[in-house]
Image (cartoon, rainbow, N blue to C red; front, side, top):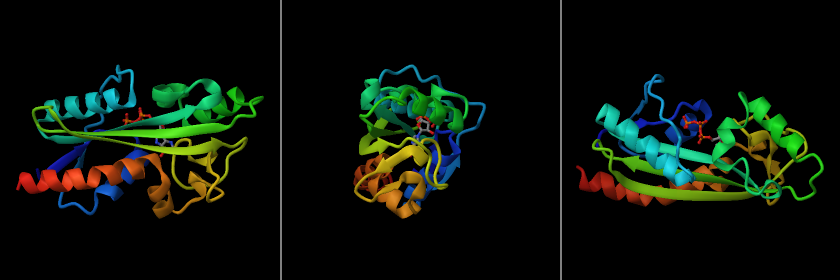
Length: 194
Ligand code: ITT
């Protein structure tokens, strides 16, 4: 494997994925924007597998996909796999969530990230997951990051993802943890494909 196609159109997510893959001897490419994969899965992992596998098959290249989202306890786990479809913009998605949580005292939530890597035939060779527990604030705080970062608060460090420097988000976040699980598996794969 020399080139790995990042199967995502989410700029914030792609930036983090590129950073977390930097330590590997890989050329990263972006999937063409016109190549869109329908997320018909019922779990984060099913959707990550769909995206990695279909992009790999289309382009006949190795591919990595991330499916992630926010599961809010007071909303019975919603928006979950529908986190991207909760509104048209990050602002709209945040506002909708804050409105739905307006009268709720239970602010518990978890971010989940599923990662899948597919070979050029579309077969899944690696899959990992990461989870990060936190709370949903009643208003936005911080300017870093993307998506729901300004309302996702980690009590242990008293900061939202959007208030943290990128290294701390990497250490604590769902994506950082999924990539920490991925690292030894990817090292192994790269050694066996030399
Ligand atoms: P791709 O499928 O093209 O990768 P997407 O934005 O549609 O991009 P998902 O289906 O995985 O991605 O939806 C994830 C949603 O959760 C989306 O709205 C993200 O902005 C948000 N999200 C995921 N990880 C996040 C993070 O680390 N911080 C804030 N929001 C995040």
